[in-house]
Length: 203
Image (tube, rainbow, N blue to C red):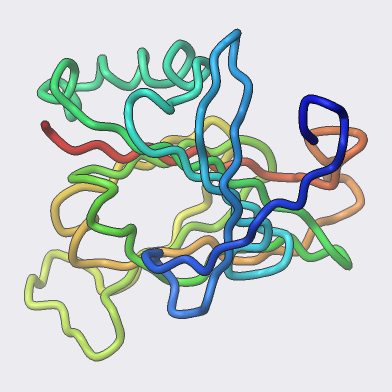
């Protein structure tokens, strides 16, 4: 909507650089944030229906609530000590909605290299299953490491992916059934799970 209150068509672009094999489309959006604005790319159905992804690139576009409530706490972790004052950050806000009692997931992928050296995945809402595996056709040479791991991820859980987990393995969120006892995070929207992903790279 423009300054006169008239609706303005939003152009849709084909993404040239993302982490799935499928063709994906996005819109450039501007998000209001405590008197400032942040620019982002909005993928309304990323990979599957019900998975909405909003991608914020660069330190100047990190939303205030992420900086104040999440990033400030993460930077106290030993794994991130070297990134405190000299890192470029990317932020991805994922929402997962249910359709026909099935909660959408996210197929196997690796985060794009430009997301940085470390990926941090913070989960809210319905419990999900997180899987990590070697890509098809590759074999594990280290006998102490599994070729595939599945973990239940609860609300407020944090996953840190670095080194081989970041670069060698691929990961996904498994679609799950939603029971009647499970309620959406908001009464007016069928969103059951939120995943906030931060990637960082040293400057």
